[in-house]
Length: 146
Image (cartoon, rainbow, N blue to C red; front, side, top):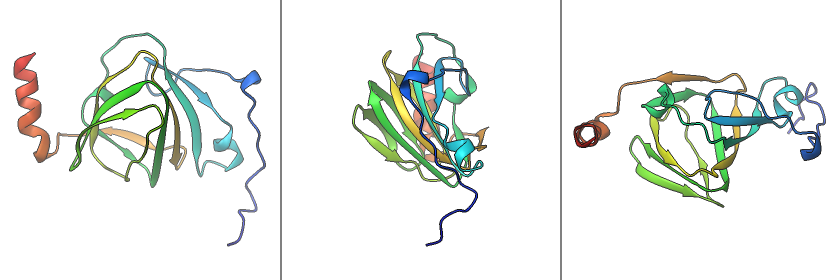
């Protein structure tokens, strides 16, 4: 296997960490420098709940236009629903290889939720989509109960 000649060595120190806004206002994001080091081939970031509460589009069914997405739960838990996989709760120490283009939605998460996420490419897009047929009846029942 040939190494990528344009990738750079990178170390990201927790002592110098910068937390910024990202895709969602309810989370803080720490870019680990992989996006720049791989020239955008990958992004690695820590995402943590920041205590803000706001409903946003990503809580609805969506997908990520990417070729790879890995999530490892560092703290807390979160409950998601995945097309063809049902509702899954991810807890501290759990990881998921979220297959590309899978429809999913966030249901809830703990106040201390924190994850390591690695995605390719770094500039992946998030697209709001209609619920999958397998979830349509369940989602309608949940909405009616609210």
